[in-house]
Image (cartoon, rainbow, N blue to C red; front, side):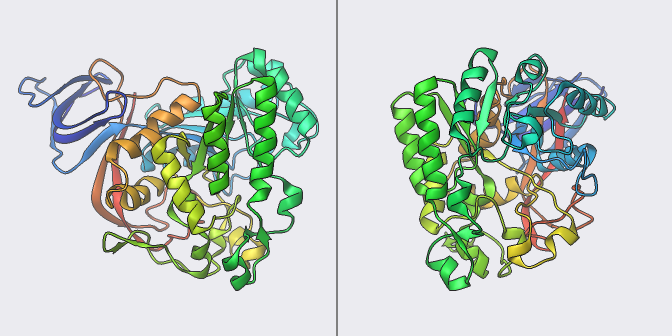
Length: 438
């Protein structure tokens, strides 16, 4: 295993709150030194001038979807890992809504066996165990059995409509010592809606989903957490009122963490009309979009502009702990339909870092460390893991990012098997050049 010396690289480390330019020596899979200037290194060391590049801990994703097993035409575990590496993610946690669902030890063991055959240089995959049998929300899965395995925690990744079942799940999981992630959404209130309810959905002629479909379910969930006391991660926060509820819950000392998906920070419901977003610092922060693009059909739907701004501020303030990718691959045929008929979801592992960097860091709204913290450190903590760090004496779990490199999103540049993204065919700025996962 050869040594590498990265010279004049900007090193970010949210753990130590350090942002500095230095030389970094990586050898035998470990970070050997980070110094202002390194003059002594092994003779076979590869030396690279990294001026203008950024070196930081690998990114972590709390939840994303795999096509395998059941829908390998959308994504395999290997293609997902390659997409993750291309986007700078060294850890990805997979939701259990595969086919069959990850609701028993046999299914989990098969997936773990499959990934053992992959290159060790690829990112680490982790798996969530299902809360309910078949992720159907009817009866508890074999939680006790799964708790003794290597799962990161329990979730269905889907709304649970029975509060009594949710309470029993929280009571049962509490002594098991595993994380639990829940998506608050009242499907009865959501009805057949496909866009956030409001003036824009009316103007576009799209059935609306009221914000109360999320907030009423969230309020009920927080009451259960108050009663039972089991720590809960709140998934897919998408509206301003939810931010208020979570802020209040944390102020009261409830054991909750929360995440927002990356596209809800970049866009709002106006994107459905082809309006890519506001102009900040004299530049368009999001490339042009097409109206009624089926790749913008998301669940939960994109919020109003006030929701978007509240979510951005909540991430910056720490009310929302982390940004999730919720990578959801679909085939071309799946998404090449009318907006209302398209399955919700979009890919994101390869796109999130460059687009968030342009929208939040280049505009000065976030510091580089603030963005890295909510994409790397905080997601790992939400998963109950020790975060990666850019410090001497630890394994090299790092990524090298060029914030100025341009590339075009397309079939040749994407590692994912699917291309369901509103940015397909567009030129983006920012590219991950290398990933270390020793």
